[in-house]
Amino acid sequence: MTQFSVTGFGPASIGNLAVGFDILGLSLSGIYDEVTLTKRTDREIKISNIKGVTQNLPKEAHKNTCGAALLAFQDKLNLNYGFDIAINKGIPLASGMGGSAASAVATVIAANHFLSQPLEKNELLEFALAGEQVASGSAHLDNVAPSLLGGLCLCLKNNKVIKIPTSSELNVVIFHPHIQVETKVARSILKDSISLNQYIEQSQYLAGFISACYEGDFNLIAKSLKDVVIEPQRSKLIPHFYQYQQEVLKVDGVLGCSISGAGPTMFALTNSDKSSLAVKQTFEQVAKLLNQSGKCWKLKINDQGAYTNEVH
Ligand code: HSE
Image (cartoon, rainbow, N blue to C red; front, side, top):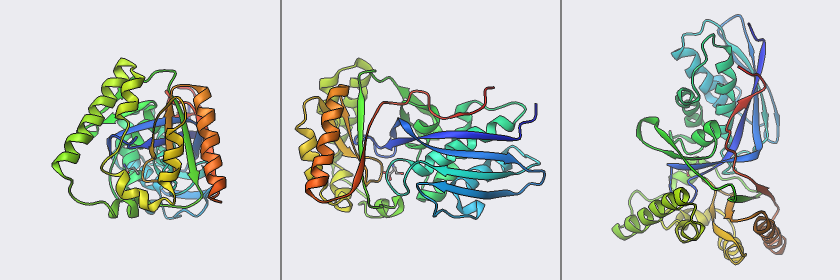
């Protein structure tokens, strides 16, 4: 059956998750980018409409996250048709919530429906990555993979992704201060090298965190969810970061608090809904005290990842 339009939904995600720079990411429920594709009879890829919380996006296909993903898809699969792309952004621009990845993912999951033999979700990673690369200037999967596949994703070499189990009791809070931090800028300020001690300590935290997720060991998660490499460098880009972190870490049931992706959004993992509520209140109280505007969400992990309005 020929479908005229398909809408894809790409969830927000937390890149890095403090312990795994560029290799670990967590999918979030409730915050999405939405992309509707309409098949064209010619091969053109055209951005036809942009609406939602961010509208100031490139309109030329090869410079746009959705357009670039779709060009890669069209090229590799030799499609003899193109698409009109309508983007509805639910994720703020340059927020550290994986918005560019979510748009690219929403695009490819929708495009997949137009194929007579749709690809497996895993096979869509490379196309979404081509979109992400346009926005962030580098090809890292830590937002693309969780947005597409859901859950907690460990991204290995050659686009291999492993889904790490997470406890259903694990809860997430994110706070987005209303400033923008471009991923390209946040990457450009990072030092090229780290000390041997930092390498050892961060390896311990990453290994501890992953092992704790398999074991469902919240105590070990709390001891491991730390970033001694990137957070000290990027915290400078987030006004009052340590004030927020210090207050949030005092809340009962908090397992860790750090920067989401390239920032400025901060995240906390908690062991219960009750604790998440207290963390949300804390973020909001600190923001009020500092006279800083922002938005806080109490969220669950999204195990499903991207989806469309169509059923195969
Ligand atoms: N891993 C990426 C970074 C995520 O921190 O730069 C942001 O796209």
